[in-house]
Length: 365
Image (tube, rainbow, N blue to C red; front, side):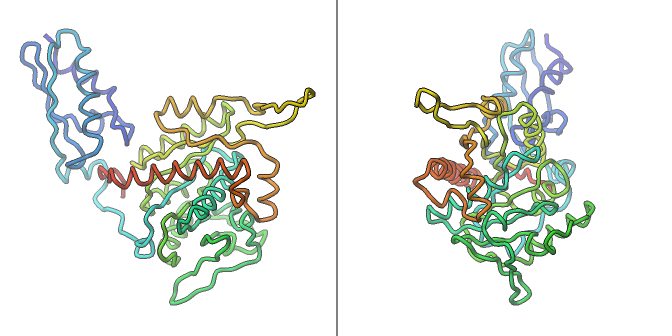
């Protein structure tokens, strides 16, 4: 006959789909009852009506059924007490920021490392959404290297204040706020973690975005203070993660995804940038060259069970358009414009899906 120890051992391998941590470590396995070959497991969900409850129950059943001697598995779902939840998520819920109350979807664009074209992707995603008729804003949260204002053709511009609020600069039908507006040109921002946290928290309070369908937040690369603060302070609908096909980029991106999953933030999908380069060969036929390798984004998406939202080519026009402040997605008939339009459709689809699912209460304070 199976023992409770054996059951708990296999359940250590079953993870919460959003937190990506073991149900046992999270304290979600409340009771294991064994009678002959029948096993009954009581699982305490973080909140009643959690949209992931069916998947959790199925994963528990599958794991327990593999233990020798188990003939039948029953899973009972209950809900954690406030005290149990506090052990995981802390006592205080993040206070809703009044300045963000009229924004329907807040989407962060992240990457595990620099140099993957994350800001270019964020800007063109914002433009593609605006071209579809959505009301869009973009926040450049890359404190140490803000570039959104450059790619949007807003160098030298400054936001103005009204009623103690900062009014974003507008370009191409998009409201733009960047630390590049606030710091002197060429002046480095040398801030430690607490100052970064305070600056981003204040931005969440003082910027008057008005009514928006989408606010795109361009995060700095990595898993440091700024991405962590944004995930904690802004009510994110989800995160879009940018990678290149290279193995080293994919490894760093996996770490970034794991960080957001630990924070209970949903991943909308992966965009593979610099995916390929198109040229004309000696025979006059078009050739597609995988300059940085191929398949990295697809494999990562498959391994982490998240969608691959699209592949963006290594296109010289994409770089040039950024340098002159006219994002490539402004031309919906260009190849790059069409790709970003398709990506925008998928982001909208995921945003609506996540909005409908609601939350299991997995955001940490």
